[in-house]
Length: 147
Image 1 (cartoon, one colour):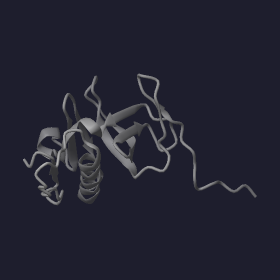
Image 2: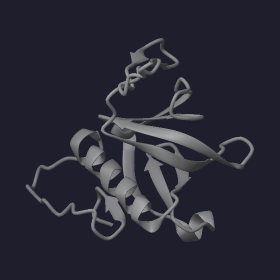
Image 3: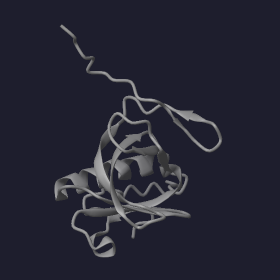
């Protein structure tokens, strides 16, 4: 009988500079809807959070075709009013913004929490000079500036 491996290997993401990013063994992953930059349409995408990078692809087995670098992330927060969709979240970068939609409120909060942890750990925007440890992410908002 044919036995399929439970540990599938994904094709690496290659960025615009030719750098290859491994997307196997993601810290957190799952399906979200993403608002298209060019057409403004909502499309289902599979997201993989690994370290400071959030990769996305058409499904769990396709090669990634995009990456959000959380090193440049300012905040991740609930965005239902902005997106006019239930369970929406916004990832705000220094020079960009991404709107995503989860399937449930719990799933939205999980993504906000996981991305929030990555922001605190990896973001160039986050400095802990005054030993202020206020980041909790419990209010569906994770803003490194305390807003």
